Image (cartoon, rainbow, N blue to C red; front, side, top):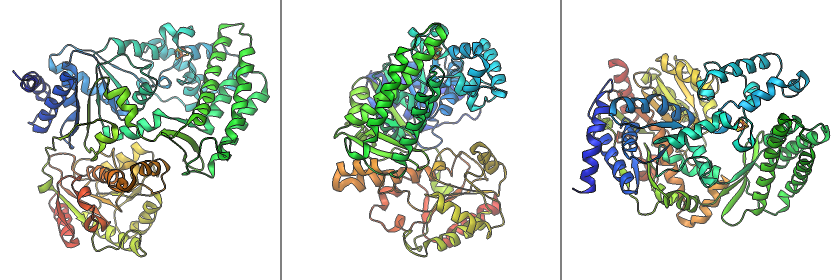
Length: 628
Ligand code: SF4
């Protein structure tokens, strides 16, 4: 029997058992193909990159082969929320219905777990010490509740709390990985929740982590996660950016403020705490005016880092000289040494940056950060991941060239499609008659066009914009010309914003790139998705600019077009969320109809019927409004 046939034989019946137990069980050929592709790659120690469109049921298509592998697998999700969804819903469902005998565990970053050592210290602290830490009044009462909870919970994970502690309370009752001295040096190391999660993972067949923690584990050479033979990476289109973040370092004013708070718990000299506070201000002042600029390591523009290094050295000597006459004092000192030492190391990394790194100022003028990121993540991933273990990467939108940019050589993208009938149920409209989005007069015509389509759709619109400025301008102009409510991103907390949009059918939601993904509103409520312009990255984005320099003349085709295509495909993917959904995607950027690269973008979108005629989309939307 061939390996392919063996994978078919083994996966098929188990997947059928699991999907057959779903409330709305249905045959999904793409899910079947994905499960077999994943099973073959995992069992043969190879890599597979699978594009699985909306509705494929990709979680079950990779969880079943992972559970059947019989060797430890790490499953990587984009966010902690998706991590919790797998752990609370999908994995228990597979356990219950597959007949497979396997264990799973969840590992999160240390600051997600309540720290028993901190709770002990807070319990014995004097009121002046608590005041200094911002733990007084209501926060102190919450610490008491957390202590009671710590006696009952088996996880210590903040996601398992049924109430929300204030930020100050949780900051006082948890520690970051930069702060924790490690279980072997901590009196509560034996029953530490973060350590228990890691021990559970060491015993489990499947460990679920979020992509950021996975990146930190790779950067640390595998210090956080237990040994594993294979990985499954969901939302793999995000991997390049996350590895860029985690393989480098960042220096932010808030880190010095945090260091000052941790040092204040142990050091009596106000001067030292003030020096760290001043370092935070100095960092802010040195960076705020340079957001978006690249910096040369060793240049005068980074001279201020040497002064900060002196402050940190001074701090480390004072901490080393403190006599620890109690366990509490010893622990506070250890944690302060960890935090200050990590900052000193980060400064050294900036100084040591070389040709394969990019140093730049990111963030915003209000919250700037100095970033060192690898110019190319492929060597990091090749050495630490692809050469070590089998990997299945999946996403609804895999940009062309992603495997190559990630360093996975000779791997084709397997596209298992989507079970939805986009041709019949969706219409893609390009407003080809509008002027170029960079031309005068574009904005006024965009607003006219958007108001007309919203009226034709009876509201029910997710209007997406590539900038906040464009979103607010459109909301101001359009809200007066439509008789349906218009919500804007930022006007309500995100969960409330999305639930208000989903529950009130005519309501429209105007939003920016942050909501190009993550909006899942099936049914009549979302019948029209609009995008103001093709979502190209800013030409002056410092990290992308450095990567463009590396690629040379092919940069636009290899970097910019695939990124824009992926973002637009994600935006379009908000429309059809189940088999009966119908609706239209309208793009107010004529380049989608005229530019030479247009087919690279169109091919990345769901295969909807296409039109350039406004009367056709208006008729389509009016018919939807009348019949639905
Ligand atoms: S090892 Fe100690 S300090 Fe670190 S998180 Fe656990 S209990 Fe807290």
